[in-house]
Amino acid sequence: MAFITINSNESIESALRRFKRKVISEEIIKDLKKHAHFIPPGQKAKLKSANARKRNRRRFRSQRPMGAGQGQGGQRPGPAPSQNR
Image (tube, rainbow, N blue to C red):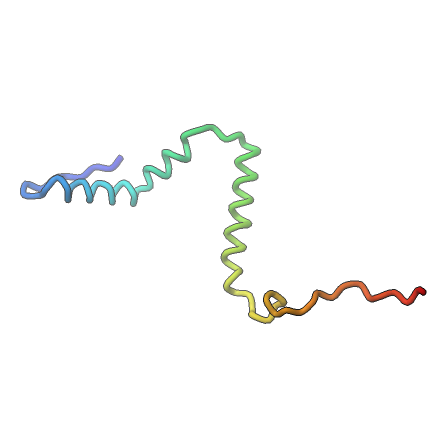
């Protein structure tokens, strides 16, 4: 729970701003949304693995070398053409 103490010469607007910052920093809203509805355990596991894949994709996107085939305009090597006529 987020509590703030209002100083004697502090305006309501600044106290409200401090309260909002504290709520954001303690992630109260995020936690409330997380517990707003029930997610079955199987779906929760799928969601967790999907988020992990997304996180890893973002993490390794910037670490890939530029000549890794993406954006070079070349064709991917495929099966060799057959000699049957």
